[in-house]
Length: 501
Image 1 (tube, rainbow, N blue to C red):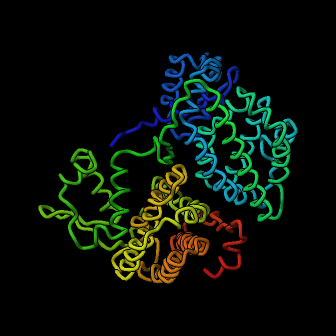
Image 2 (tube, one colour; image 1 turned 90 degrees about the vertical axis):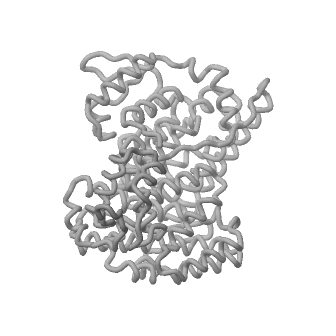
Image 3 (cartoon, rainbow, N blue to C red; image 1 turned 30 degrees about the vertical axis):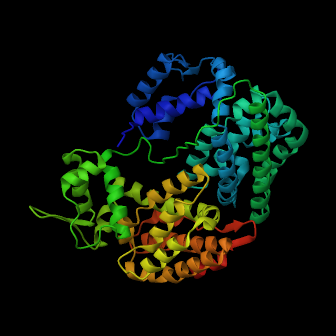
């Protein structure tokens, strides 16, 4: 199990933004105070990051001034940068296809009923919208879209967009690739002129449809440019296997936290049944590649949360969660952050599950459907978790699969199942929907299957929010909105249907 420190995570992210041209030479990085707030770390950590970037020759640091980015044009002007992009061309195409599916619902949700004119980059975005993506205009537009996602109240939305910025190679295409500029100015320049106005559109379905169409057109452009570059580059490298990374916990969790997350998922799914001993501590420590002391620290935390009971000389047994523990844990600042992360992850899951399910549905096998039917009848198994885990194996777009997997990992249904009045009643409510979803899969109706899973995720979100708010007086849950969901065929979940859930 590889451990990444907060310092290494922050260093690598800022370094990558400088190298790919997102932070151009001659501009200043945010101050150490701003970065401390952004990454929730100490000033000492940020100072060490600055020292490492200075040692790499990427920034210049002077007392009482934010660091200045030093010219690094050679890093992305060189032939090496072109060869790297060509080696990653399959990943780049998959990234654009994935974000064409995900960004429209995220942007529609975040921008509804918001005054976009107050955003810091709004006026600049309006001003440069007629210039297209050239002359650095793409940076302003990118900042504007990121700000829209940030005001949606869910930090995971902006986190996903930041990852897109790191992987889209847009600086190279817009500033170092004449072929891209020629095609864009001829056929696509009008698209960017409409984005700012489109984000103020009141009809969410019109906004969703237009954003999807823009994303599809731009992906076609990227594919055409990459093909041209590959055909006209001597000794063009073969396209490598796509390796996409998105981990919302990067740099934010300790080894024992990862053990806790995995064990709670397995207990919640029924893989480790209530009342039966977990594997021996040495076995668990070996499987997680941690020390015995780290494992015991994780088990002790699980016991404090009311998920397991540790018996001396006997072992550790999963137990039925006692929801009285939740009231005791929520006032703790760390538990408050976890509760918000949980409900934010459910909200994000609602927004992205439909395109993910639609993508994976045709690849389910009859044997897998038979197994899902069988397990649905077992009261000790969480069939919803199983259907999501099976779905993950069938998503062909690697970035889409990784983002869904990362989002689902944050939900930790086993840990937070105590937020619900009665586990059995909750799953009795969604079992009919899962049954229907499996029948739609057998009939080849992918849209209806995706609709059913969206309903289930929305039910979990609404139920979790209401219980946190009404039972535990967790007032911050009142700011969590239930999204309306749209697809190419229309509204999947309207406000009226959400009220019925």
